[in-house]
Length: 375
Ligand code: BGC
Image 1 (spheres, rainbow, N blue to C red):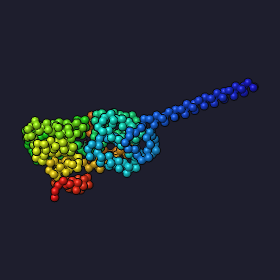
Image 2 (image 1 turned 180 degrees about the vertical axis):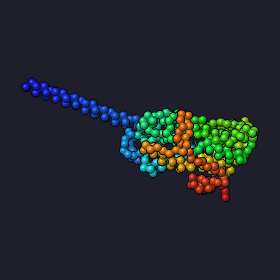
Image 3 (image 1 turned 30 degrees about the vertical axis):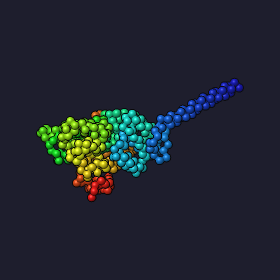
Image 4 (image 1 turned 90 degrees about the horizontal axis):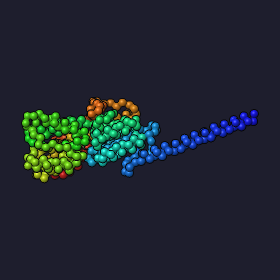
C-alpha cells in the first residue's frame, strides 16, 4: 500500500519536472523571438517612422493599416511632391505611412524594402530604380503575404498586383505632336531616359508612334538617339554636346525624356548659341522648365498632376491592404503578366496654356513661373 503511494508521488513529481522544463523552453523561445524581431527591423538613420512607432515591431493585427513606400530617388522635384502628397493621402485615410528612399541604389532599395516588410507593412508601394532588379522586392513582399503596388514606374517580370501611373506612352506622343507641329521636317535629336526605367521605354515608344510616319516619308531624320544614365541632366548635356558636334550645330529639334534632361540639353544648346532657337520638349512641369517655357528656351513640357496620382494610389493601396480588390481600368504587360493598371491622363503645356494648367492648378505659383521675366 505504502509502496504504491510512494510510486504515485514519484510519478507526480516527474510530471511536474517535465512541465517545468517545457515551460522554461517555451519562455526561452519567446525571449529569443522578441530579440530576433528587434534585430531585423532596425531602421537606418534618417528614415521616417510614423508618429510614436518604435522600430522592431513585427506585423501585428492592431487594426491600423501600415503603408510602406520605397522610392528610387528624390533627385527630381516631382518626387518630393509624390512623397508628401502620397503620405498626406494615406494618413487622411487613417493609415500609417512609412517611406524610405534608395538614392538610385538597387541593393539599398531591396534592403529598405526588406526593412519595411520586417516592420509589418500591410502593403508595399514601390517606385523602382531598376525595373528588373525590383522584381526581387515583389517576390520578397509576396513571400511575406504582402501585396505590391507599382507606383508611377512598372516593375518588370514579377507578379505586380497593381500599377498606378500616368499614360507614359501618351506623354511621348504629346511631346512629339507639339514638336512636329513646329518642325515638321529636319534633324531630330532624341535624349531618352535610362534604359533601366520602363517609363523611358514607354515614353520613347509614344514619341516614335508620332515620328515614324515623318521618318518613313524622309521628312524627319533622327541624327542622335541615346539613353541617359539615371536621368542625370549632366549626362544629357554631354550627349547633346556630342550630337551638336557631330552635326556641326545643325540640329532642328530636341525631344528629351523629362525636364531634367531637357535642361541638360538646353545647357549644351546655349554653348552653341542655340538656346531658344531649337525647339525642346520635356516632361514633369518642373518649376525650372516652366520658367524656361515662359523665357522661350524650352518649347513644352508634359504636366502630370501628381496629387491625382498620389490620391488614387493611396486609396487603392489602403483598399488592397484591407484585402479588397482594387479597381483597374486596363492591363499593362510587364514581361511576366498583364498587370491590372490605372493610367491617368497627362497634359501638354506650352507658353500659351501655362496659366490655365499648372498655374491654375496651384502646381506652381504664377510669380515663381514668371520670376525672371521683365514685365
Ligand atoms: C518619371 C518621370 C521622372 C523620371 C525621373 C520617370 O519614371 O515618370 O516623371 O522625371 O522618372 O525621375
